Amino acid sequence: MITVKNVTFRYKGNEETALNEISLTVVNHDFVGIIGTSGAGKSTLAMALNGVIPHEFAGDFYGEVLIDDEDTVDHAAEYFGRKVGEVFQDIDSQMVASVVEDEILFGLENFGIPHEEIGIRLEKVLRELGIEDLRHREIASLSGGQKQKVAIAAILALEPEILVLDEPTGELDPESSQEIFGLLKKLNEEKGITVVIVEQKIKLLCEYVKHLVVLDRGKLQFDGVPREVITHIDTFKRLGINVPPVAELSAMFRADGSYAGDVTLTVEEAEKMVREVLHDSV
Amino acid sequence: MNLLNYVPGDSFLHRLNPITKLAAAFLYGIACILCGNIGMEAAFIVLMIVISASAGLAGRALRLTRNLVILGLFMFVLQLFFVRTGAPLVVVKGFVLITTGGLRSALLLSLRVVATMLPLMILFAITPMNDLCNALVKRAHLPYRYAFIITTAFRFVPLFSTEFHEIQDAQRARGVDFETKNLIRKVQLVAPLCVPLLVSSLEKVNSSAISAQMRGFELRNRTSGYKEYPFHAGDAVVFATLAGMIAVSAVLL
Ligand SMILES: Nc1ncnc2c1ncn2[C@@H]1O[C@H](COP(=O)(O)OP(=O)(O)O)[C@@H](O)[C@H]1O
Ligand SMILES: [Mg+2]
Image (tube, rainbow over all chains, first blue to last red; front, top):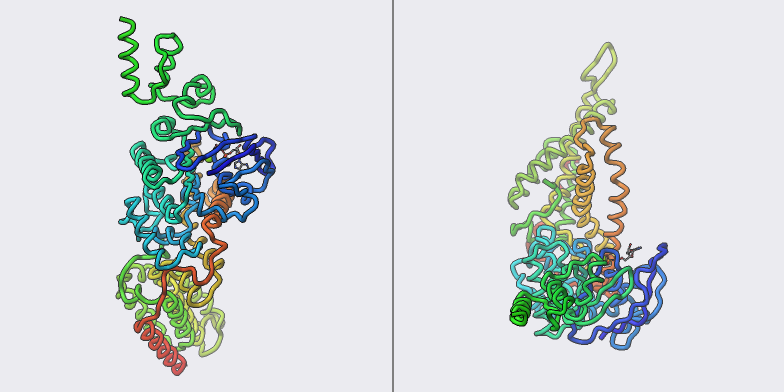
């Protein structure tokens, strides 16, 4: 579990704070989505979750981040690296090896996993992500989706309790994006891994996450279940985030009083709502 | 194509211990430096091309040789006019321009340049950087930190060139024409791109370091590496052969 308490962070040399009095809780087995416009502080927040901030970036840090009651500032940067594994935003520069296999071995070797277990974990994680055939490939020759999977595999091999991903679908086509989300859902449901994902595609977030956080200029705007958060359609519009059309439709019906149910997040739900509304008006 | 990248394969050369490959490249070079016989120096070049061919790298070796010959020619010209020993060979208006000693030493030097550099270049084709560094850490006790810096530097070269082309494309989209033949104009156009390139490179190096750190880089020690790099009979054969080569070169001195 991660507890963020009143965290404020200002990068050295900046006037503005990148995070401003943020408080939030990530419970075990949670699937959290973080959304916000560019520069809202999403990456900064993601990096604060396991101590990269403030350990690796100079600046003013206030408040505290507790990981199972241990404060991130009380330990060396890598202390939480295994428990809270993070896939960073820039996919290319976070790679440390040139071949897939070596990339996955890196963390396992460093953290001193016994050598007889390393081989088992390596094969297991390749299998789980369906990338056995990439094992000996040069990372530079992979597609964006494949690279994301390798980056996830390198973290997953360390068997983290919490997986933080910063815009993993940022440069992927819709199909690969769905695939990544499907994979995360599986990890979340079958292995009980807590997932925190920074993502711009609100439709995917509505479909997959249990808990949605909206950031705006370093401030927490909303924090709740997607169905509730998404009702603030005006705020989303102001922030320039396009809500799914089905949600907007239900908001319109609610506004004119013809519908009193929950916001609809999928086409099926919207269809049901439209039938209801039409039925009532007959 | 890049003449220094790794070419996957399963030949005798590929399967050697990375440390053997590195040492062999240097020992081959030493043999070439010791050798004072023009014919044998040329033979060393041919031999290296033949050895490369056995690993499926004939094309690579020939292209490298061609490039090295250009460097060799440059050395040849310099040496030709600087060495004044031996009988006069070319005399212009009573002034000795080239001597037999000059020609001989120029020829030897240029061949030697090609012969010593070639194995070092071939080394890159048959050895993944990662393996070389890991083997050096495990077997030669090179501190991991240095090994990591070397591999990272090699890995980042193509990344930087991609970055450079992206920045260049962005500029081109704004109407900057990089296709000019005028060298000075070209430098004027490309120089301003170096600042954003440097900034983004530093950012990349930084995020790479953070990712390494969070995956326990600081905790690593010499025994952490999972892969073992044992020496085999083939490695011994290579060392013995090279010792022989050096001995012959030294005798023919
Ligand atoms: N390394 C840094 N140094 C200084 N300022 C930074 C750095 N990284 C981000 N910022 C600033 O902090 C703010 C939040 O950035 P970031 O967390 O990257 O936003 P997001 O991920 O939501 O796009 C931005 O104003 C950005 O310019
Ligand atoms: Mg970001």
